[in-house]
Image (cartoon, rainbow, N blue to C red; front, side, top):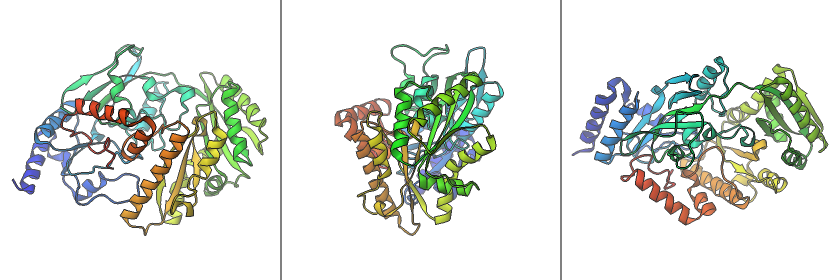
Length: 473
C-alpha cells in the first residue's frame, strides 16, 4: 500500500469517529501541533498524519484500538506548554488534540468537581471561584494550559507544596483510556483518597505514557483569603537565609514566594513603569480562610526576613502596585524575547533546604563553564518558596536548528548535574523526554528499566506518546 493511500485510510477512519469537521490534515495545523516552547522547528519529515479533536472518552477509545491494530503512533496534546519536550511528536502518527473535551461539573453535594481534559486552568479557576472554591493549581501558562496536562504532570507550578501540596493530593479519581483502548475509572467518589493500591497514581504524574486522562475528579477546597508582602535584598545569601529561616522557625509557609534577581527585577519593573528596585526581590502571598489570620502570617514572615537585614521588607496593601509587581515577573521573559528578537532556553533547578545558600549561589552561576551558554546572560527567577529556580537564556535567532538542539541538550545536562548533586528533581514539568538521562543518573538504570516494563504492560505496542520514555524528544 502506498503512503498516500494508507494516510487517506487513516484520515477516513478518524472522520468516521468524530466527523470530518474535527479531523484536519492542514499543514499549518500539523506544524502547530508539533511545536512547543523550545527554539527549534518542527521536523518537517515527520509531521503528523492528521490532528483529531475527539469529544468523548469513547472517541479516544476507538482511535487507540485502531492505532494498536494498525501500529500507528498516537500523541496526546493539551496545549503544548510543557517544557521538557514531551509535547513534540518525534515520528509521524495521529495527534489527539483534547481541546473539545471541556466538560466541567461542580458536584457540591458530593464534595468534588470533575474537569474534562481540555478545559483550561484559568477557566476552571474562574468557575470554581464563582461558587466560593479555590483551585490548588496555578500554572504560569494558566490561560492556555489544559487540565489534562496538569493532571499528567501533577504540577503545582507556582504554588508551594509545603503550603498546599500538589494537585495529586486533592485528586480523588480519574477517567482514563488505556493505550489498548479500554476505558477505566480509578479512585473514589468519596472525599477521602483510597488507602493502599490506587490506580489513580499511575496517571497523576504519569507523564502521559500509561494512558489518556480524559476526566479528573478533584476535591472541592473552600476559597482562601490573601495577604501580600515584598522584600528586597542586596545579596543572594540574605534571601536564601531568610527563606531557610522561614521553614526552620516554623512560620506559616505562604502559598507563593517568587524571586527575581537584580537584573530581572530591574527589567521587569522598568517594563511596567515602576522604579527599579535597589537589589534582588522576593514577593509572597500569605493565606488563610480568614483575612485577619493571613495578614498576621505576613507580619510573621516580615519579622523573619528582617532578621537577615533586607534593604526593605514591607506588606503590600495597594493592589495596583501588587498587580504591577506580579506582572513584572510574568512579562519579563516575553519582553526580553521581543526586545532582543531571540528565542528562549529555560530549565528548572531545585535546591534542598539544608544547603540552600550554596544551591542558590550555584543557580546564579548556572551557565559557568557551559559552552556558549556561559557567554550569555542568565536571567534568574523562580519559585523560591519551593527552593526552585529557572535559569533562562535568550538565544540569538540566527542559530540553526541543529545548534539550538545541541544547546538544549547542554542545558538539560547541566540541569541533571545540578539536581543530582542536591538530591532533588524537577517539580513542575514532569520527567523523561529531555530528562531521561537525569532519571537514570538520579534513580539508577534499575529504576529506568522498571519504568520500561510498566510502560510495556500498559502499552505493549508502544503506540501512546512514543519517544517520551525513550528520551527522543
